Picture 1 (spheres, rainbow, N blue to C red):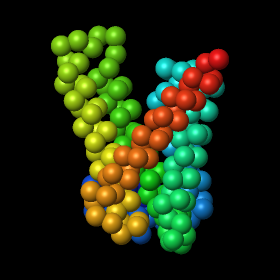
Picture 2: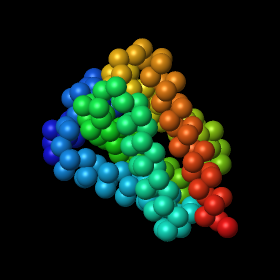
Picture 3: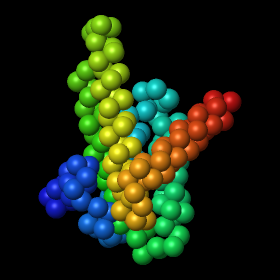
Picture 4: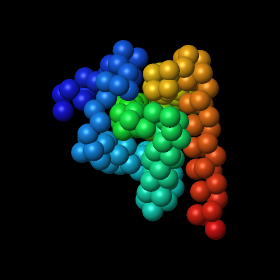
Length: 170
């Protein structure tokens, strides 16, 4: 457990690569569970529990499909890369949840809104950078290419969630 936490911190600080991630199916199952639970907790307040569960499961499915497509030429790297994406998502999701809990409540001063927005935007760019780092190392491309590919993933995920929300709301 400590090794996974250390690896997660090194991964999101761009010091480790997906090749350093464990490829264990048990670890993967636990990371999927943590990722889904964190996603549900993050969005259940906005959409309700049932819709949050659907969103979280679709999020993981998109991430897995993306990883499989990305690594079609390197199938031996799929498990470690998927685990790296999950671990980075869990760590950055925890930071996001902590920031929301600490800084956004009924007493939040509207004068702080620009600073809070900037903080959340910086966190989103950090996620993009970490995902780009994972992609770069998984398929041996430049970091800029990895970031662009990751931007495609996040855009696809965003569009899928909007579509899903419109379908569920009917």
